[in-house]
Amino acid sequence: EPEVTQTPSHQVTQMGQEVILRCVPISNHLYFYWYRQILGQKVEFLVSFYNNEISEKSEIFDDQFSVERPDGSNFTLKIRSTKLEDSAMYFCASHRRSVHSYEQYFGPGTRLTVT
Amino acid sequence: DAKTTQPPSMDCAEGRAANLPCNHSTISGNEYVYWYRQIHSQGPQYIIHGLKNNETNEMASLIITEDRKSSTLILPHATLRDTAVYYCIVRPLTDSWGKFQFGAGTQVVVTP
Image (cartoon, rainbow over all chains, first blue to last red; front, side, top):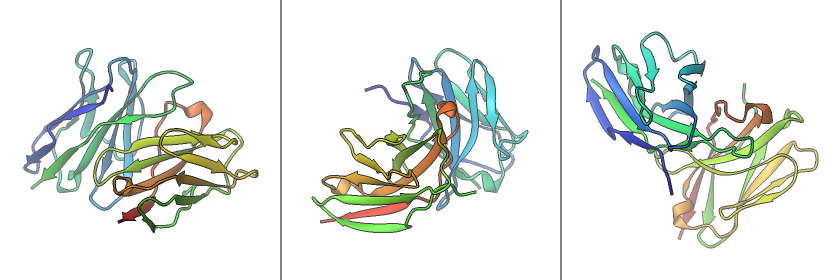
C-alpha cells in the first residue's frame, strides 16, 4: 500500500539554524500539506500546497517558513531561522484530487528538536 | 471555535466494542463528520466519514443521529493496537481537499 514518507525521523538543530524537512507524498496525489504537533498539544495545520503554489496557510506559517516541491516527488518544509518554540513533530500529508476521496494520508512525522 | 465535543478519555476492554461519542450540535447541512486516530505520536490515520447515513468499513462503524447533532464511532472488537487518540472533525463537503482542524480528541486505552 502506498504511503507518505518523511525524512529525517528526528532532526536536532541549534536555535537560529535553517532546517529542511522532507516528504515524499503518494505518487498520484496532487494536494500536499504540512501540520505540526507540539508535545502534548493538538495537531495544527500549517500550509496546503497545490499546483506549485500555496493554497492556504495558517497564522503559524510566517515568513520563517517556506514550502517547495523541487521535483516531481519531494515536498519540503524549510524553517529559515529556528526558534525553541519550533520544536515539534511535523507531519506531511497528501490528498488525491477526487470528490470521491476524502481522506488525507499522513506521514510518520519528523521530530524537530531545537536547542 | 470548537465545532465538536468529545470526552477526554475512555477505557475499553480488549475484545469488546468501543463506542466513542461526539457532539457536533452546530453542524451545517453540507458538513461531513470525519474520524481520524493518532497512535502515539504517529501521523493521524483516517478511519471513516459520513454525512447523514450510517457508514461501515473494515475499521469501524459510524452512527449519526437523525438530527445530525451527534455521532458515535464504533470499534466492534477493540484490540490493544486500537489504543490511540480519536478525533471527530466536521468539515464541509466543498472543502474536501482543504485542511483538517484537529481538536483534543478522546484518548482511548484498550486494556487486556
